[in-house]
Image 1: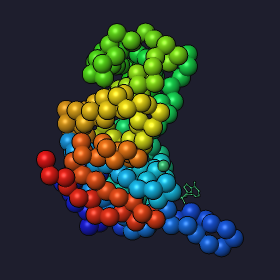
Image 2: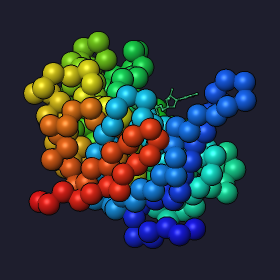
Image 3: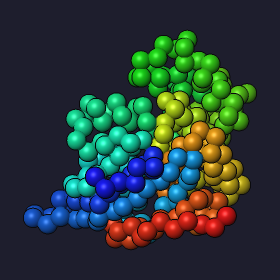
Length: 235
Ligand code: ADP
Ligand code: MG
């Protein structure tokens, strides 16, 4: 594949078609190319229905592209079995969607530890890292709180901490601030920025709020499934 090998996330000529009507197809992604380097954050903008979430779903290995190639941290995901894609996702991809999707009965700390269970890490071994991650997102005092005892911004911070537990090389974020007011949105975006730098992850963030775009390293625009070449923002 003709990939940019220095990028931690690479999509090359990715097309995704959904069945549409009796015999037609809808191109949610139309020959998309995207390369994101470790330690940088790319914002993904574009109208509703243009394919932004579809792009994240393919990049997350949750949805297989109809054609084209996906590589994560140098690993070509295209030929992998579903099981190997799941393993790759657990080891290399952090996913942060709009709704934090936390389990109501678990504390903030437990939300992080339970995910590690799926990676085969014992709770006792996962605990120090979970505490460290809560500290990084500014929630060390809230480790024993359950979701209903946290604000919307705090729940999103738990979500972010959880996504970092597996030391991902790629972080995929879909409208992280859609449910938050301006001040909280601003601090969540700044947190994602500092995490991207500190952990050297390749981050793609879908945002409808163009105000935050200047805080990112590059902007890519989707329109009808087509991605304009992402342009670097002068810093
Ligand atoms: P955005 O996130 O930019 O709003 P999406 O990626 O959700 O856009 O959707 C892109 C297009 O693909 C839309 O026309 C949408 O209706 C269609 N689409 C998304 N998911 C599916 C699906 N699971 N089945 C069929 N069509 C879908
Ligand atoms: Mg979407």
